[in-house]
Image (cartoon, rainbow, N blue to C red):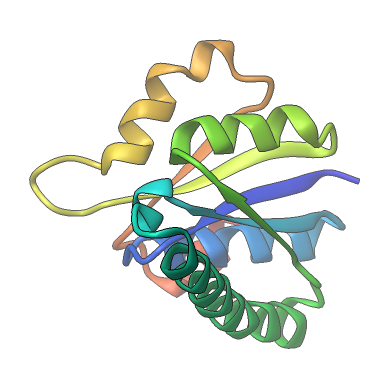
Length: 151
């Protein structure tokens, strides 16, 4: 089964990437894998405090994921899978793609401000020639109606 890999973060454009992945998976019989990456910089404290912060980050991610998962199940008949990794974001995304041979497409949302599409899109498009799967970049300001029309 082909999986659409989407990165869960706090960016506004993440929402359109989730929508696109769910719509495409629902229409093509694919699956959605949602990857959240916890930065190690969040835990540069004493060991005990770092562990508490790590667990709180996992809980926040799980709650955020459940909102998307319910929407995907209810609207598109897709039950997404959550993967949480720790480390720097780009190496962890690339590692997940290498570790899961069923990932067929990486779906990213592009930012809409004047600074460009965002650091994640910028870095991964630089490496796109050597990725084992294609990247779909979804404009962050694309309407739900337009997404539905193209998926």
